[in-house]
Length: 412
Image (cartoon, rainbow, N blue to C red; front, side, top):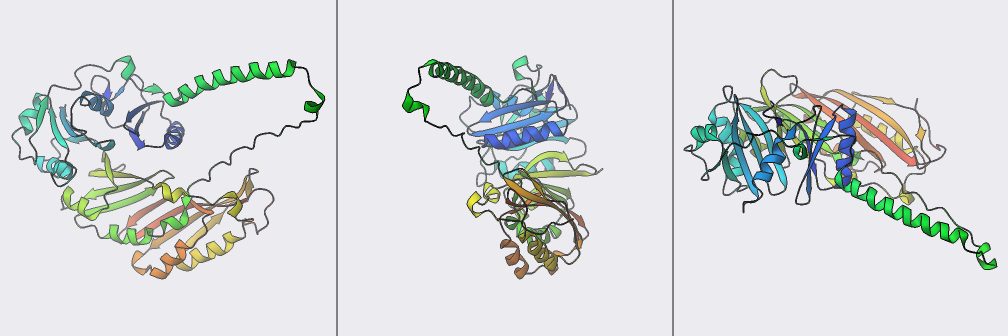
């Protein structure tokens, strides 16, 4: 919902690594987003993307309004039309950017949502009620902390400097690097010109120059072995009390969990899930009923890759690895593409489909075998969709080996 040019429910990501931000910007362009915002909090970057121009990020605006306070962690509530906007962060981590319909959700839902953030034995965030409507509704409510109040935060349209940037424009640190690089190149050209015009001595004429070695590009995805706990995790998600986990999705940088509320509270959900998840949207895509979309960043340890010296000399290991997976997923179907190469690597893309997977049948021996899969076998994308107590799995793998001609068997 747009209020004076401010937007809350944007496509959001956050990371302390600039490389991840650049990867997400590339992904955003592929998805058709035309504008982005990049807001730095401590060492973390909050990225927001949209397909609209001339709008501002409500989260960045609210955070800027409260940076002068002594408290680094806040839960901010403001009534906007028929919704309450919930924005929460703990130090440099964004916890929530959620628009909740007031008619569809009672106050108890809001109390459950914010309970852990406000608890004195939890995240210890402060509570801010912005605007008269929020203060009339919740100033005397039974919060675990005393709420503070302020004026409306979205009563003016975003200034030009607050509007999201065209996605073709590079992030600030890249623009600074371009300026430094341009200056460096100009200086190097001047030095090179002087060197070329300098008389060559016999000793210098025999010197040879070598081109600088190019940096090896990173492998796509994460180690498939790092996902060995997935079957056990699916089993736990099958029995989340009072909530239904509908779908899990994985990309190189992020996990998403689609959940649907049943009879249990938000606090009950938090107790049953790992604390890595944070709330991003107020509804599950494709569902007519209220739900939640939880997101979590992928640990950097999963992305570790073998050194070039230890990289497999050929793709021969792929056949045995797929046979190993077939043993533990008898119903799996594999679709293996032809070998590709770029000079650094040769690789093969593999699509795996597992219909009707029952995590109850998974064994510790299977998990051990999964953990021993070679680090050159990478998981690029994945999804798991609940079907009762069974799961429909889709895995996209990529097997790497040294560049050049393939020594192992090619799969057609």
